Length: 103
Image 1: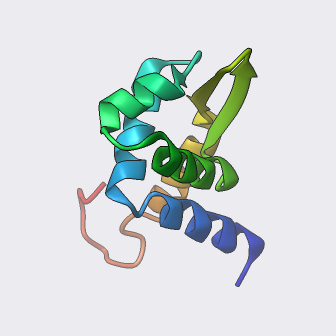
Image 2: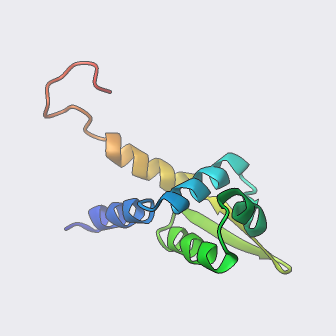
């Protein structure tokens, strides 16, 4: 397995939980400054400790960045990494299938 394939598999695995996907969408929609952990918690409706675990998984997969400001933690989307992942999924769209208009 190539390093590129392993990175993409890790990122997709991190997205494979409904709450992580819900949190990521919320953070993406928040824009470049991201969202505070408390706002994310309110949106997904889960305990802070559980949310922390899920956010760490997304950070570790390279899909989110985290910054601290005083006692607050803000999470922002790594749009570059998300673009690389989605580009990978579409990279060879329909190349082997010969079907017109699938992309």
